[in-house]
Length: 290
Image 1 (cartoon, one colour):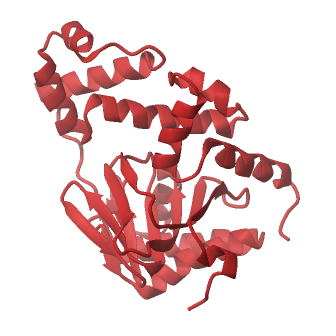
Image 2 (cartoon, rainbow, N blue to C red; image 1 turned 45 degrees about the vertical axis):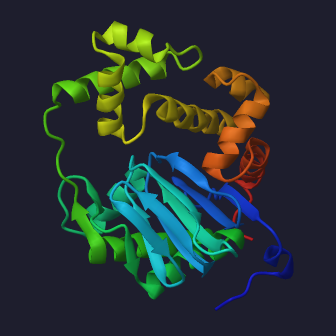
């Protein structure tokens, strides 16, 4: 197994970035020891492969222990958190392909109908884990042909072995309709959201009924969902070149330190480091493979 360079053996480090040669993909390579991710969701898929140590991933149906040779696969909008499973933490590579990218690969390479996803959260598949690391290697070397090719082979392999058609959404019950309406209001008023009582009154339900319905529908209570949504919107703003201070105000955080704290916990890097990688990506986007 390839070893990381000496500086990466010491302490925590992380790189969260995009490679212009593979549109629709975010990449994270990191070592975490003390850092833990609070419960959050992703708009796209998550494919993670641990190189050393153990990562505990906490999901709605239990905890999985990711170790070398396994691949963690999380469908979009599934709430989850993560932490070190051993004192020395974990080193891993993660791919975050968009739902559209995975859907296109599924349509081309599988017979799955409807929305493609995964029935299992973790699988023992050393070859697929190696491919996840290879996508990172190719992207870091500036090899667009290899990065795009290996990514597609990785996703196709996982879909072929572990993919399934996700269940179609059934008609919403009254509680779920209330949760959807609450989510829409929070999205519209992200900068100055209503209190729980105000939100419940506007929707004609009690605060506790709203809490129960929202958590049952989205896996998170409204305040936790709102913090996560603010961070996701801040990411889009940083992608577009907005400064962290401006992004903090735009999404409703009281100040930049408030954004820094939540962003770092959820994304794994600071807003400044995240924006710096984006700026470097856009600067080199037209340079081609190294």
